[in-house]
Length: 207
Image (cartoon, rainbow, N blue to C red; front, top):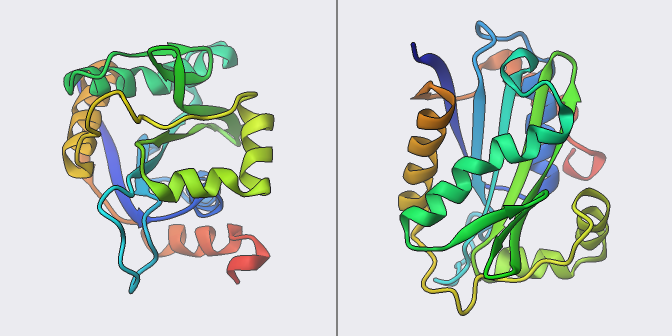
């Protein structure tokens, strides 16, 4: 039996905005405790011209704790396994190495997990060879987060073949999550209570 789930597109976001969204959804009144996947990209802000190869993806899985594995050590692999399968749909021989998503021994993505209230939250990023994620990784703050959350240095997908278009990869990931977890997604948007919770979770720099 399929479980209803929500798929929410955030558009262009960075790590802090994604985390604020996760925090907000985790404390806002739930809609029947439906699992949520947030999908975004680290492209140029509105009004700025993005380069064609700027393709860094960010996503998060937010699920009631009873739907996640009982061992916290398995949460990241539970959330990232569909991303591996989606990569393979495009001929990219991806695999998981701990919290890292790898291609041919090179780390191109990864995730970190935490419990927020009654929810399990896994945030993840994929560097698809474009400059937004690559540039953000050069920032000391982002490098510190990677070292703390993943314990590794990231590389790009360069040399592993063409990165799939965002909408195609998003659709593949969505289908793979549905197949693995037995969820049935509906496209969704934050309601008023969730928007207020997300705004309250934003760090001061976003005020």
